[in-house]
Length: 344
Ligand SMILES: Cc1ncc(COP(=O)(O)O)c(C=O)c1O
Image (cartoon, rainbow, N blue to C red; front, side, top):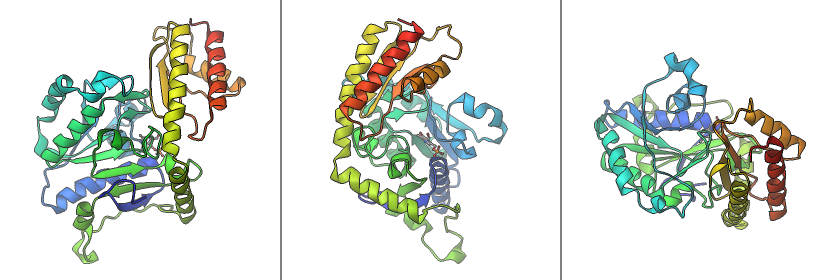
């Protein structure tokens, strides 16, 4: 794991994605405190962000459905607006979002000295609706954070370990975050495990005699569970030796073609998009079918596939070992489900 990202190679183990996010938030704040920067207490996230459902993770998430009832428990976060979303890496905005960046930088420049960290799902926001954004935006955001002494937390819980066609989505923008959160793909989903990787610099803030009170105290019973760690090691070894990230790119190309075919056939569908082994399309907003997502999920299961639209977004995120025959089955079954809905 320590070879994934040069210089981000100190590992703190946990047991699930939300815990990893809590750890990264706490470690960022605490490191600033040790460095004497007690005013750095505020966090910035992106509109449509999803980082999990514990109190800290919910605070930096932007999905009302999940957080509204718990608002009294949550801390205030600034959510950057007008993110330059793209359909894929062939969108011009992917390479250059200078105009859009001007508006975003204004939002950041309000109180940079109060910021502890900016947290992002690099390149793809999952639960927020499979939204892909400009690599140039991520590059600019990372550079801005470095210039202003603000940490960057890369929540790669969904994107990490080859899902976007790179081992880490951060590689699309060639950035090095201060904290990297991994889970899901780390054990191929077989056992619960997560990890927060950080730099030697952050590690050194906490490395001292216990009596100095600088220790980073965050422990859950199953953090770094040995069995899960063995599965993670095996997963990483298979991903590396079988070049799974290249396979992710290959199956992604196949899926995107199929998504575009669905967009051509079902004209009420919009915004087909994708990167790596992720493809998505939006269902009609004004569709009158009650509980459309549920209907799709139930009908898909009857047709032998798992589809679970997020709100109005239908997406494919198959296992990274999927073969073209699996993807063809996914396409034909999805087509059948959409035909049954008569939304063309
Ligand atoms: C980007 C991201 N962050 C955090 C989480 C939370 O992980 P967990 O459900 O393991 O707590 C998820 C889960 O879907 C996620 O996609």
